[in-house]
Length: 320
Image 1: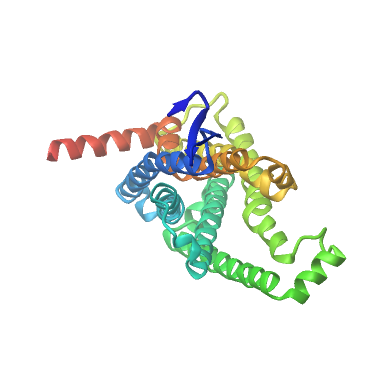
Image 2: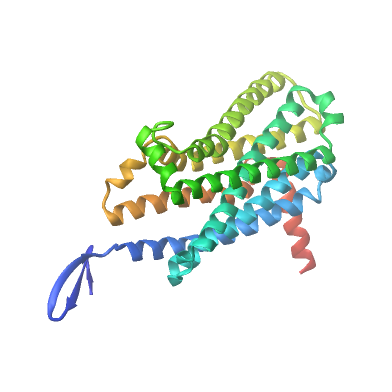
């Protein structure tokens, strides 16, 4: 029976007090918490794809890029949160299968990194539309966006497969591992680690931040003291969607990457077992929340998207 934060466990007539929040219970709680996140992500991102393929941006780079980001987030949700929900709630032993675990981790890294770089692509597209509206009409076509998406995936796949090879070499080739650790190459970190720092963290974060700053400055100069036509309002609404998505990306991703890439991971190592598991699960959950946020961010930040979503739901209700 649980009493407060301690439960009494009797083994051979010996009563032992153990913490109520054990590692298994923490994992189970987060496994259950992933269920609404999964449903929210699937619902929101499917709606985004439907809206983007049904509005004026369907034949533009905007529709292609926003749809590609939503599809990528759906895949990340299936590979990441769904896996954790299954493993943590039913205690499946799939994680003991090394080949499955590494393949799943590789796919997760590919699509999660691609999600960040697709956001970079959308930021670039909005930067061009804001700064060079005339040139963007001829340059930023749906074909250009499709090529951009393909290039992002090819580059990310190549880099992540290379990182996996570096990881396997580091783990299984004892001579290389000893050389890296003994000589403290790159601060004691193997090369595959630093490639991950740039590809998953520094690269997209810097590009998104710089692009967002220039977009905000241009919008402030353009909007102040001027009246906009319907086309300008639509551009402004989509741009606000992007800026809000960028803010959500920063807020949900920064804690995880700071802990993992900026040397604070040792702080977790020094914590007790349940406390460390709680911290890691919390940071991971916040990171994966980003895949479920975009729909709600678009609804709050963009009047045009809000109207499109309302029209879609009204159409579905009328059909029902």
